[in-house]
Structures are given as structure tokens and as C-alpha cells.
Length: 490
Image 1 (cartoon, helix red, strand yellow):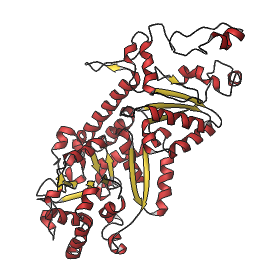
Image 2 (cartoon, rainbow, N blue to C red):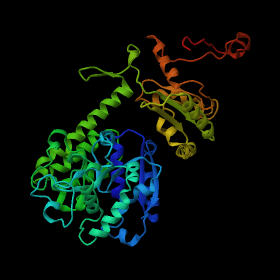
Image 3 (cartoon, rainbow, N blue to C red):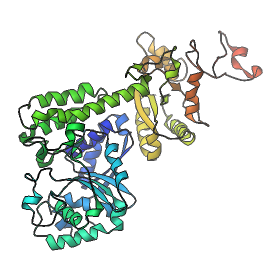
């Protein structure tokens, strides 16, 4: 469970939401997975959806398939029978770590021609090191065979060509000749139907064999390693310390936002301890792409959260004198206390209904008490995935600055209603925010509200609406015992 969780954890580091994980596991492990995920910060939990499935060998002979190689490994052959409403999936073994944005690998589906149903990497790069070309007692794909630890699967096409039926026939013929279980069966299948396979390159399935003697994956010299496959227990034994070092760094990562000073720093530190080994001598290949990803992610965060960047890579933080550099993604703050969760959910539904969803997310900053936080986590986990995808959620405690009388401000009006006054203190990393009371509904796009920042001149600091449009109905002119003013931006 820990190894698989770290594989999914690595996927979340560089890939923006949403992600959907389909986990095939035994019943007693499902709760272990769920307990593990619940220890992750809420803003990360909201970035993915998990669907659990029992181990199912859909064509009978369960014992035969369960024990063909490592327990349950052959489950991947039967995924097309189980995910009948899914068109395509990226399958990975549990001993995999992503060092790149998954969507780059996912885009390989676009390169499929009309006959291709799956995509895998070669088992080796060098004939002198190849296993299939030296030891296989059955047909195999190409010159060196295929590795099935990372596989793009077009499930619709796999079902259309009845691949599973063909695999069953292949098993009956070659049962006594296969060594690596279903990987051998896939090799035989694509030997028979080579036009159905798209090969991809080794930087997306980098294994100990690629650096055991020297680096024999040439694409990594240009692009670095994008996916690490710790086969042969490489993440957990002393023989492959370089793989273990990267696994250790990701396992220890506690979801800190500064990836450069946490993950990248630790990977370099741990790799430096093994600089004399063959894999250690090419440690730059392990960090080359991950450094690019972190740099790109930090740059994107600067643009989204702090302003615009120039051609010289200098990012400009928005100020009152630089109002054109408002971040593109709307940031919305809500203060939630008590039993307001249902009210908030309806507000979010109205935003979802009237705001066109695109690749731009809405950042939702929820300032809550402990009970409201628990209620909101539960409520948001139950809404449809498409709606969850729109929001990136971050929770904050109800906090009043030390320079004020907390009890006085809590009880000034409705419980914690005055919290909005202290948003500049509680959200110091933000330059602009939309605040809504929880008892509001949106009847137009949130983007329209956000665009009102463009109306600010150099003296404006907030935008509000009038309390009332009709003087005779207005409360402040009739009853107020203090000064008041009409807002100038509305």
C-alpha cells in the first residue's frame, strides 16, 4: 500500500487536477489506502478521485491467473472487461514514480493511428543486455521485447479486437514456455499483431537495467528521466541505492509547497551519497527533468498567484499601480461557521452552473471552524467529479490577529462574521480576493465579478455594492449613528 500510495503521490506533485485513480486491490487493503489518503492535506485530496475494484479474473480460472507470476499482476489483462465505461487508461505497476506531468505521457494517445490499441516501451535498449533475444522460448515483439510496467491502453479498441480472447488462446499454447507471466503473453500477442502497438521511449520507463553499467537510454541525456520504474525491488534494497534515494525523498515529502527546497534538494542530497556507482555517476539524468518541472511549476504559480512575467523571466507582483497584472484564476474567500455547509454547497453549485469551466481553476479559500471544515470536506467529496475539478480548495482556521480582542470581534455581529475584515492578515500570500457571504447565489459567471478588478483606479482598494438603490428604503440614511459612504466601485 505504501509503495502504491507513493506512486500516486508522485503523480500529484507535477500534474494539475483532476486525476482519477482506478485501484484494483483486495478488500482488506481498500481501507488501508483510504486511511493513507486521508492523512494527505485536503487541498491534495480534492485534486483526485479514487475508484476501488476487487481483483477479478473475468474469464474464469482464478487460481491460474492469480498465481501466473507475482500475485495479481495478470489483473491488468482483464481491465478492459471491468472498466467497461472507460475509453482509455494509463496502467502502471505499483513500483513506479512519476518525475513529470502525467498529461505529457497521456498525450501519446493522440499519436495512435487507427490500428493501435496500446503503447509500451522496449524491455531493453541494447542487444547485449536483452533478455528476450537471449533467453525467451516463445515469440516476442521486435528485437528486444516489451516491458509492461507502464502501458497506455485504449480499452475501447482492445474490446473491439477481442484481445483478451486472443491472450487466452496464446496462454493455452505457450503456458510451459513463459517466464514473466502476462508480460510474456503481451509480447507474444504484439508479435502476432505488431500493427496494434505504439512504442514509446525509455525516459518514460527508466529501470535499473538502463544504468547498471552505463546509461543506455539515450533520450534521457536530452530530456532527463520522466518516470522511474523500480522493478526488482529497486526502491527497497541496497543494490539500487539511486532508485531508493528518489523513492525515499518522495516518501518523506510532506506536501510542502516549495518543491525545490524539499523534493529536489533531498533527491540531490541522497544521490550524492552514491556518486561513485554506475547509476550514481549519471545522477544529473535523475534530476534533469524534475528540475525543469519544478521550475515550470514555480513559474506558473508566480503567474497565477502573483502577476505577470516578462520575456526576461522576471515576474511582477500586482500592486495598486500595476492593476493590469491581476492573476488569471479567480480566488474566492468564504467564512463558514456552524451549520452553513449546505448553504455553501448551493452557492458553489450556482458558481459551477454559471461559470464556464476551462483549464483555469477557481481557488476556493474556506475560513472555517473545525466542525464546518469536517462538514465541507464530506460535502465536497460527494459532489460530481466535474464540479470538484473546478475548485482548488484550501482550508484556514478562524484566526483573529493578536493585536485585537478576539472575543470582542467574534461577538460583534454573527459568530465569526467579522472574520472577513482580517482576510488581509489571514491570506498574506494573495493580492486580490473575492469575498462572498455564504447566503449568496451567483446568477452570472464568476469571471464577470473577477473582471471588476480591472475597473479599479490607483486609489481603490475594495469594491462593494450599495446597501440599497432607493433612498427611502435605505437603512443607513435613516438609522445610522455613524458616518457612511456610497461605494464608488460597484
